Length: 312
Image (cartoon, rainbow, N blue to C red):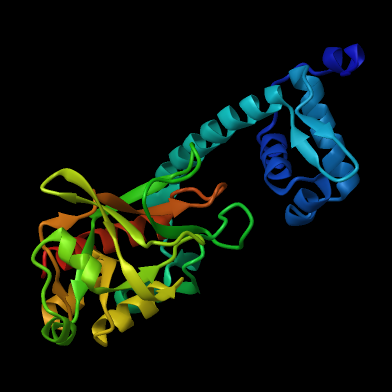
């Protein structure tokens, strides 16, 4: 239990540094790992966590021989603290952004197909406009862990997993059915949803989940499409290239195939079928505020991605 003497000694509210430390302890499951990341001695970090608990009058963590886990009270407090810190950092970023040059290192995580085909030339243009900026790009269809990996932000489809994360909405996207003209000439063009069962599908696995059942909308009505897939892959770039090579019908993000549709390499299949809209967002890692780099990147990408979706 927390000592009464510690409570009496705690006359001020918790410090921001102690809150950030506690959040990293919760994310990493231990004081030692959080201390290494923050360049502190484990003993110093342990003492800081205990002082924070004394100030609050509750145990934030349960300790075992293997890891620290938040208590129910600690989990609730840390969740609220995370949201509050995110808002504070956003406000600080907005306060100082006008006085800050676009410089330093931008560590960005993107998916393989979007990053290679769509984003790479845009980032080249962005770097040319900001010569004092360096870029570290992490390309993978695996969903990066913003709490554990050395990245500042990720470009992601969908809604963020954690409350309190700072996000910048860029565009709304949809998934659509596409195939190469050569494939449709060989296999025939589906006219109805039921026709898809006779066609080759390209299965894109995301987060180890198979996509062999496509849940789409037809004129706003939910429908489920089952595909027969000879080819299955966990990489969106390969799925798109297979579709271009005439290997079957793929379900792809409209933004990822916009250039292929414009060039005629792919065409839409059953154009009235599509997914519900889902956003492409710039998601900041915890502890990263909306600084000049992030603000400039969002301002740069938003209109260009919108033009791609509009066919421009």
